[in-house]
Image (cartoon, rainbow, N blue to C red; front, side, top):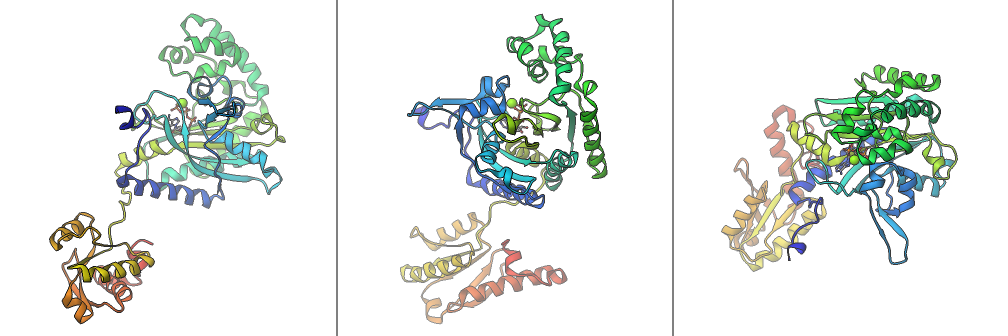
Length: 444
Ligand code: ATP
Ligand code: MG
């Protein structure tokens, strides 16, 4: 029984108390992306396993240890997406977006799946906000993508975040670097974990990304890529830095970051916080000029980032920056009896078609119980309708905050109620209330 009453390890429910804030974050992310010209794309939750093997890279932790892979009933090997880039690139190719006006800018919010050890800030199902830009090799594109991520943190007033920046060069400069790294790690082979021993032959740079403390300490004195950059890569990196300087975005050059995914070239970056514990990397990204052609497309420079929304939310909550709470009820209309209930149902339905959050009784409760419920759901206004109100065709609407009541006609209820709300809010705000409208009070 325990199995059916408990969510699978590493997954979590998002309850109504939280979904309002989540939606606010998601909407804000899309609005920020929109200001940079990134348009939303939605791709499937699962793809052919091979896409991730090729697109994320055989030597990465993600592919080696973390994928949810299974055979479907038709015998295809399917994988739940562990990240968003591979699917976006696949869609870019499948729909011939390389023929569109370039750069093509895409963004998404999606659930990702990784079989990892669940802990604070690390789940097996998690949300990522990601952006991808295709078709620009210029360092200005790198700066634009970094600036977008930075805007997100500025928007939510997050402090204490550091932008770590590095260049991992192109395949040419990396050849020399790989040789130097190999030589270094060969000398300290006995200190490496089993996975890193394998990486030593296939892709020694992955060792720098290993989470084991022993490998981390060995990696500390290893040669750094930035000393091995070719002239073009060096110049590209310097220009990215110049753009960031001119936009007033602070960064630290961190020669140790190489990013977990195989397809990165040149610029790589991470936004790191120390305030949410060990899982402090809230956003990681960079350039992946080789990926589109690796997946069979025309040579297309590209770049992007992935931001963990769960970790972003932890940061926002740490700051105690106010996120809007769930929308409170605008008005609770209580019927005194069944006859009145016919009217309150109709009134509520009229209000709702104007997107006013109205509630009335659907449980046959006493007036006292109804008022208790109205209090619990935070109704801003209440109105009680019984035989007197029906006779007079009017009802007193009570402002629950001020206790003030005003009579509103039942015939013209929606309009009169809205006028009342506007009047009362403008009066409360005094001069600041000039220009107040129903929409900006009730948050449309
Ligand atoms: P980490 O080093 O924390 O494992 P990563 O390098 O594997 O991160 P990416 O593949 O770059 O992460 O994914 C981008 C972002 O997605 C991360 O910076 C993080 O915010 C988020 N993320 C990655 N894995 C998880 C997870 N298991 N649970 C929650 N968020 C995650
Ligand atoms: Mg990881």
